Amino acid sequence: MKPFDREIVSGSVLRSVWKLSWPLVLLNLVNGMQGFVNHIMVGHYVHSANSAANAAIGVSWQVFMVVVVFISSIFHGTNVLVARYAGRQDRETLSEVFYASFLCAVAFLVCVVAPLGWWLAPRLLDFVGAREDVRVHALPYLRILFVMGAPLFLMFMVTGAFNASGDPRTPLKLGIFTTLLNISISMVLIPGRGPIPALGTTGAALGSVIAPFVSVAIALSLVMRRRMIIQPPRRWLLLPNFSIIATVVRIGLPTGIQGVLLNIGGVFLLRFIGLLEQSSAAQAAYTICYAQLFALVTWTSFGLRAASSTLMGQNIGAGDPKRGKRAVRIAAWIGSSWAVVVGFLFWVGTDAFLRVFSMVDEPAHGYAVSLLHYLSFSGVALAGALALTGGMQGAGETKTPMYIAFVTQIVVLLSVCQAFHLAEALTPQRIWLAILVSHASRLVLTWAFFRSDAWIHRVIELVPPAPLEEESRGA
Image (tube, rainbow, N blue to C red):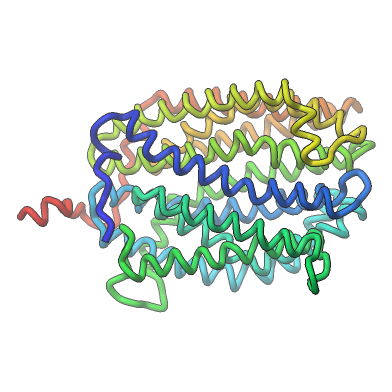
């Protein structure tokens, strides 16, 4: 049975941040490599005008991510409770939270997400304005993700709960294994090897759903063998504890709505890109630069957001919220500093980055160059905002980040695009400018609220506080 890590809630704050952050940041970069490699392989092996196959993957993921982020964000309620009770060293309660959430997630994914996703897939592609050359690759890809994507969702849930319990290294190992397996499967299915025909984007989708199935099975076996902080439940029930689920949903639903708002903003952004004269080229540039190259910033920032959430939750559980807040500030500075480095690389190595994806033809190349230049500034604002958001969410304050997301990623982002469209002045560069303005405004609003202390003292209780394990053994 793995012990609780007391260094997360005591000792050097910088050490606590570093101990949680580096595995989570590396995990997110490793996860991002799966899409990165798929785009490279599709660009090389699936021949299409204006990089339509790459655009298809990007458009499909943007649509699918609305569901992914919503469900994964609901899991954030699980992570908040796991972190809170891990800070108290209450192993029994956090294990019950995990089991109830897992049961509910499996039922929802199989009975709701899979059939509804299959039916809605063509309508969603119509909504984002995917043209026929993009749609022919995108529809089978998107349907596979919806119908067979349950392991992908469950992988997010399991690794998130492990992280929240104070064990970021096991998810990192599982993430590396998943990525290597995904890449191996894609290298066979995308171009075709031996008797297996070339499946193109369909092969990329199959790799994305098969690999996490194996990893989830390994993670659950570790829990069942009592090798993790999270343990098997006291009683095996077919129905979850609905009082736990109600608390999880109450905490996680605003975060889920926030995630949906962010991705709805991205979907509407694709719709504006679809209105451009060279829309396929602009969608390909957006897919490569924002969804893949910008992942050097976003995946790092998501890792720091998860670390901030765990640090805040565990320190509140241990009775020291001020220490948690100091840790979140440090995480925000680390994220923004890394974004400065990546932004510099976007300026000096633009052509080298784009050649990796075979994006050398105009006008897609020109659109991509200008987008990378805008993203070099956007990344600094986004990295800081995400770390601060993670701290607030770790304390259970999920509504205010939701409101900020609505204002910045819906009102600000889409208003700027709509204004240019009504003035008949919409260009790719002006859409890129709207992205920068939305990220900058998100940082300003998030920092303004983070400076207060009201959000730290939210009361979240499932059961009365249990004695620390160490105290119980001493008694």
